[in-house]
Amino acid sequence: MGEDRNPVDEAKIKAAALAVIATGSLTAIKLITGFVTGSVSVISEGVHSGTDLLAAVMALFAVRQAAKPPDRQHRYGHGKFESLSAALEALLIWVACYLVASEAIVRLRTGHQLQLPTIAIGVMILTLPVNFFVSQRLFSVARQTSSLALEADAWHQRADFYTTLAVIVGLILLTLTGWHWLDPLLALVVVVLVARAGYTLLRDAVYHLVDTALPPEEEAIVERALSNQSHRFINFHHLRTRRTGSRRNIDLHLVVRDDMTVDEAHQLCDEIEEEIRKGIPDADVTIHIESESAHQRQGIEEAHLPHQVSQRQSANS
Image 1: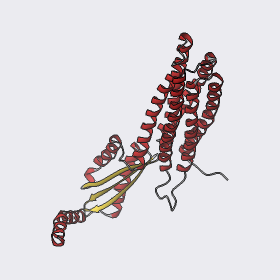
Image 2: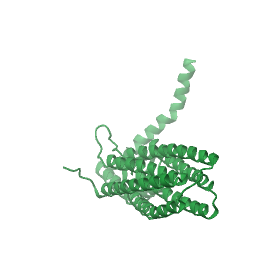
Image 3: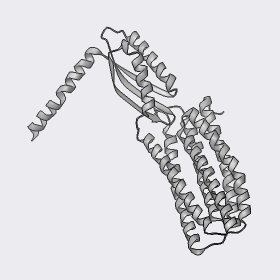
Image 4: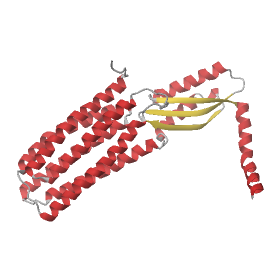
């Protein structure tokens, strides 16, 4: 019996599966072409597509895991599997870059001659539409579902498209000029571009893993929702935000009048949460209610805290 999933999770899983199938085919085509023609730039593209394939498999695993509901061991859900997957994908990119760069440097030193460049050009041209279509699909689903794993996979595919285009241009110049050193040199250019994409991907993944706050435009949505209801409460504080996979975790303390009933406070929280979710659909909002008098007592205690700490430190010294 299959798992019951919501449409968002199903869309993510289907997009990730599409990337696995397409990238697996492209990897095989590019590697075979590279070895037959002896083109290190085409081989580098095949290795690049191989890392894309691993990334696509990891993304598929990650979105499947992230789709699981919270359980006793993961009470906030499994969304960070997507961030972890993206970080591992970035590391795979750098490993591949090292291998390709090493081979390209050897080819530059030995002056390796490329065979059958026109075949390499033709095959690489045929792979371009596949890369572009898959990347477009992944970007579209990633935007709709706020999936970091799919966004990472989309950037893999888009980088593959641009580097393949660069290889085609280089091979055409090589054919026209006979400068065979263009092939390994172009491979090194590809390495630089792909390594840079790996850095960006790793940076974003780490931001999510270490609970970096939501971007200013999303926090502004939260503050705007609170501002629209500000006539019904005293103030708010301790606003904290973070991202867990495609979900946003938002919690804050809301100070209300002493005469507000529990039902009224509950209704107010529901309306604030609903307004936040209009701007951030995947938001998980937690609001802690404080009475005005309790908040004032807490403020007095906190105001005295530094003085009490300094007194204890003086007594211990």
